[in-house]
Length: 577
Image (tube, rainbow, N blue to C red):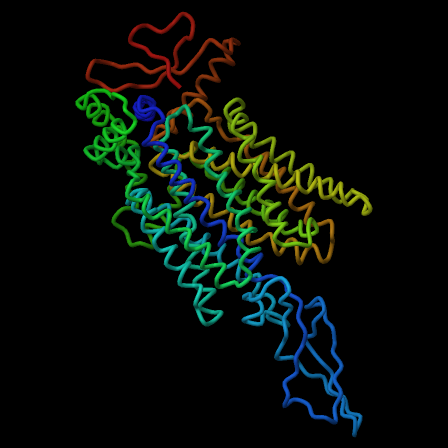
């Protein structure tokens, strides 16, 4: 199979200077969106304020009485104006406020007066970014699959940098919200495409470790975001400072290569050979002779064309909107791919909802917003580090199911904790946060291995898009549902986690399996797996049957079939995944 042949070439390359440059550059790239994703904590905080009636609205013959409302902590949205001479009292709406600047000297909340009927715009500031991610994820998948990983990352990171810096000086709230939406559309370009490129240039031996550790900079970026906000209390200078960090990533774009796997799948064989030879020189290893590498690539060409016929190419030549929609429906056209797609959509929807929902419910951990942000990142560090030996030894499927079930049980147990045991509630909430973060990280690796190369970016981007739907729904669950029934958010999040764990039972394990490059390979593998299970059931000997590859002749391609594990296959057979 082409997947195993390409993995064989990447195994020969090993992990050297060429791979490490890609890993370092792309992991730094992954940390950059953390500041803007979590910007609402410091740019649109819930500040204390007081009403300042305009001078022309009252005269010396009046006295003022303020009406405290639920919209503020110590401020006022209305005031009573009582005329001393007539005794008449008039209720007036406040139009000017004085904001507490003891923590923040300047915020979007205070500058644009997001209080008293406008406080929903604070939530909008965060949710519109998520909405941009929702819109941009499938479009990013389409562009990266069609035009390549490297051009998509290059253009996306440049646009992200320009918008992030430019938004620091926008004069109106409406333009600021538009810039937030545009930043969100570029989010998946940096996060998902960068992640996929790192996975596709990695050796199979380190792919499991890399798939988890690559997101560690996100947790470090979260902690750094808390530190930067502590040092810089003006929102415009704070956003400018973290946006300028993109400058350090831009020069590394000159060192990144296109994914050899994508080049082979798309038919750019000469370019693929050039990239592999450059990687061999940088890693100081000897690959097979060029004619042998070209032979491997050419043998893959017919398989790719056969596998993509009527699927990936069916959308080419249509309008952008039709191609956009068609690319999404491709993921539902074959049985195994349909199961994978539905399972990933459910998992990502739940993990996004629970991840941000638990975060929004944890404000009682600290009254200091800077310490709280650092703690958020610190809790996630074990999820990015301890998962490495877990996925290497236990695979992807079993840990994902365990983390979903464990998080669900913990969250479902929260409503039964007595109110006096606050430390128990905090401990369980942090366990739930850590386990759902662990599920999030395993899913990133799991989804990149489940989808075939020809639709990998498309599939992972649309799945990632569902996590944004979940994150957009979580504030409504915590604020509106929680205001009516304090126990409801934990029950909703816990039940959703259990449902996601059940949905994962239908997905295949990917540990030790070659990455599928075409939908045909994926379906053939599923068919052979079912046939092997039937033979095991009929013979009653679980270890007797295995999937093998056989070559019909010296110049013919290889085919998968079921063979006996004992005695060993003849010389014309070679065991495979």
